[in-house]
Length: 375
Ligand SMILES: *Cc1c(COP(=O)(O)O)cnc(C)c1O
Image 1 (cartoon, rainbow, N blue to C red):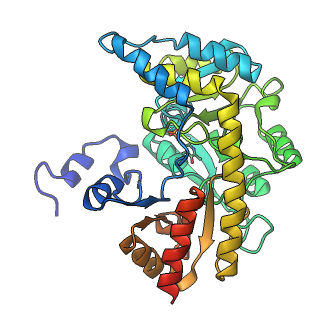
Image 2 (cartoon, protein in one colour):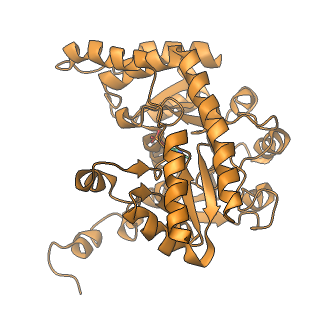
């Protein structure tokens, strides 16, 4: 029974989509853990352990003297830099306080009561959250099976099959979180072609900069021929600026203009704008951190395999690792040894943990802790 003013009481007063909604699960309380111990191997949130370009730090310091002013509400300099880099028009760009904000806003604008939102099982958790919060019906398309070449990966046929005349929005992530799997170039192109033009199709490319497989391709080149397509990216992962909160969407100018109607006017702060501009310009640093990540991802997958722990193919900075029946016991024992992974029960993958690829030293400490647990 609910009593006056408790969560259930307020939930009953919330709009329909929010009434049954569970908040985003950010994993372990890392901030609290940091206070309890002097060292922690943080492999739970897919952050970039190498940190951003040193130029980004300098840019933040320079921006500090204007912290009493509002940031540029248009983010003009960052958009100009992004437009140049991506070969798109500035009018095709939308900045967000993290791409999470943009994913939510897309549902706020294009979905809602009476519409369907389609997304894949084991797709990024924000897709379902955004769909439900908008009041739309959440339609989960089945994923590929565990023994497919891309285990738990997106199934284009299932996604297309879930589309109805009520479908307003469809989300996929390529590469996907939490599986790490991806759609190859031809499959993606065929899929984008097959989605009806009335459906706003979102391809979340949070990990695009880290993908190096020859069969991986961004959806950006498909934008010109598909005006219903939206590609989202972030500065949180490869650019290592998760703490500053900045992401962007690339789409047709008409779609961007409608999204602008609900954008909070100063949604990206001045430190983030300055840092992202500097980070974007430092191509060498991006190349360096993505190369380190790729080499550590391979080494970590091998080291886990040698210990009998299978991992899914990944084009990201994390590995979905199968610990089987022991998963929660292993996670707890690692946590006791100061190693933080992301539990996957919330995704319906209780026999797996998501492990962010750390530095060589962090991965060594993870493996040492794992060997202790297994001993
Ligand atoms: C991390 C992540 C994001 C969002 O990150 P922001 O920090 O909000 O930009 C979006 N999509 C996927 C698939 C992610 O893993």
